Image 1 (cartoon, one colour):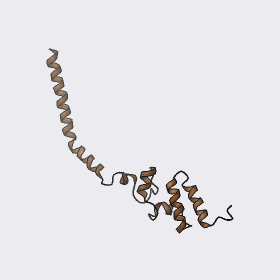
Image 2: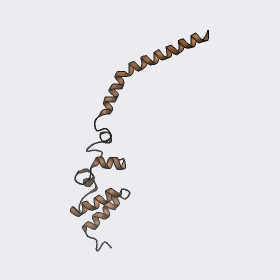
Image 3: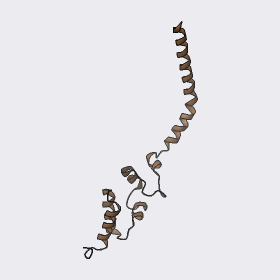
Image 4: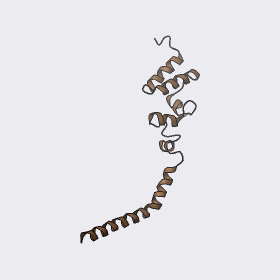
Length: 116
């Protein structure tokens, strides 16, 4: 069978081996083989020419290029609002502690008054 299989065919077979459980990536790799039959898995995933890394992270839940590009935290929180929320919580934490102490003190006073 490989006697009649050309470079594009071999490239598409490599894609089936690389992305056997990921159908969108497998099809995309097959399309990339049409323009470049010597494409590698890393080049396909990390070059930014064929796929968007953030889309792969959102669809499949893994970072295709962990050493380059954006990380999962950057994709899930693009506005960096998590850091702002943590800062807001740290600023309001004394207020919540004070309210908690007042509520506990009020409940204790009510319990002592009703006890007599």
